[in-house]
View: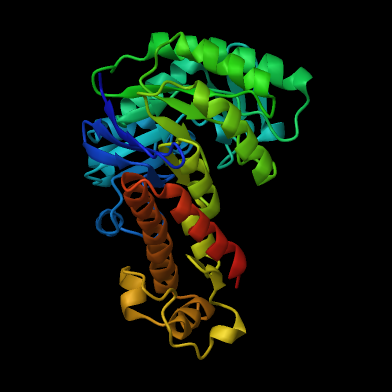
Length: 373
């Protein structure tokens, strides 16, 4: 198999999991946060900078790379690792979320999805087989089945046939995946906000014996308590000795809540997206440095943070950079935000090791909730 997952410990307080995920490009401690490099780059940062903050695995997007520069070009370059010069592991999503978010620009059929490019309006068609062709060419260590991500809210009458199609597509992806020795194909659990449909999704996906399972269709606009409720009923149904990946979730509170429920892997564009608006993530809440109160604030973004930004620069300087539209401001806040989430996962792993993940999570959640800025 392309990957090996070892479960080392389950926290006596909460059931949070401590593990190691081994891929062809390295060993990854879990639980882990994966920075998003949508278009074969983590925005504003070099691969070396991303590695220096402690990231072991990043995510890239099949939809975007299929459209530009094209999977065949990436394959000709030697694959995604060589093309972008990233030494660690890579996960690619299927592009399903991006395609289905196009709404009026796409048409779903049993065979696949016809859509128009958001770049130039050109017409394209993605089937499960085509998505496997693209991801096999990109060469990521972990790849995803093609699925339909149901919107929120969505009636059961929509979600049920959508789920059944996703199950049929998973079989087609399973059958079309060729690089099983180099690339691990994960199945995706869907079912909207319906507990019984989530359970059916798990039951059917387990039949394919995928090396790992992703939980999709969450963090799509539903209230966080509802997301946690779905996780509470879904995660326990997944195999104990295979990695569990919660797709598109990356706020500090949701990361902590997800780990407590037994999730191993997370990704989200949040840390780099909000950085571009001058917002920093800290243990004490969000800091929007472009705001006036920080004009003469010479403290770091977060006291005690070990990132390059906090070790050298003040909030006042970062505010100046953002107000002056200097790219360095985006770089420095992105570095901090990603290091903050990577470090949060490091701290969670240590807490699990010491059987105190519940106490640590309570401290983090209380601090985040009581110190919003």
